[in-house]
Length: 485
Image 1: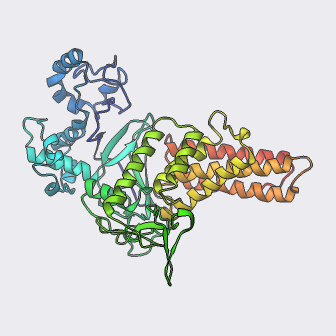
Image 2: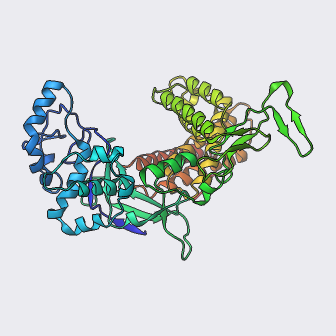
Image 3: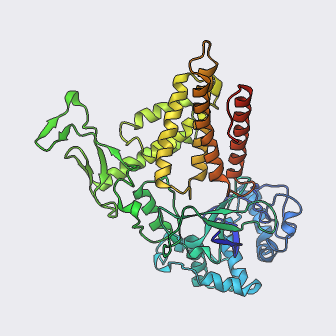
């Protein structure tokens, strides 16, 4: 363990207007029948707002506009509760409630030079919240929350943001050497963050976490970091056009000439050269994208526009509870334009390996051997990517454990089918070897998720892995196969 600490402040996310209980942060509705008896803000039940440590300090401020909120909501049928202002308000109230915490918050970076007059952040966050709060202080607090806040997803689906006294000092790297988890079960340790090493850390090596998504390509990661954290990452992964050999940002070249040492050869029947377009200088946002097999060159803006349009299409399809058929068609279509390891294709494949075996008409025992083999092949492709971009499972523990479980389901069922066919296709010894190989996938997933706190998504996945392990051992015992001690 490297760090274990509670938050200085926690509350609704700065740029969110999703209604939540101000007592426990559980999702609620604007028209909830339960309300704080004083400020009349929606809550999840009659007792939550009474917690003096959470809601009471801000309640006196919110009371000033309680009646106006109810009147406006009833007249316009539109919510007028500014949840996005709640966490800055809680920070400001620490001036009197806990000056030590207030001083700790003020020591954090706000990057005000990037948030001055004329920016969207400046105009939105400049709305008056407290009469005795200067505009400069308000902008500083909002900047601190944007730059240093950590998002926490709670069990019921709501998200909050929190500031921590030490963790904010950790630097960013797209190949982090630590992982962190949040305590989200009710109790005194609620919202406590725990930071542990995700791999051996050498003496003198900087402790690093990751403030963006590990499954985005370099252009998307660096753009996100520049917009939210106000710095440009120059780590090993960002500096490598291939992103450690994964080509997770790669675009398929549609050129029809192959460049050889001797000459340019025209491809047969109008086919493309089969090369991959990657940025020449990935740290330069205006870098040209060159093909590794032919002379075709793309401008950075062309590559960006193509990937953005594809991303919108993937998001739209994923948002509509797609079927196996729809995702297979989308995967086939987009594979014309993207490298097989591209992060947009990863998203589709990650959904597909879960639908194969769980969607109606595609339950695990309904799948043909060919479909099971396809499921397994996609799982192996996904694991090859995650093992490279996140070797210590710092950020993708849940992604990897899901894929490990789905690969187990496919491989183990194929082995069991071969064993149970009459006459048997394989001897018992070969079946034992294959099932034990699949069983090892479960053990790996369990090890990855062991640090996950109770009630988290990871802990639920851990229970599923453990259940599958018990079922696997029971089947092997029933068939007289050898089970490891």
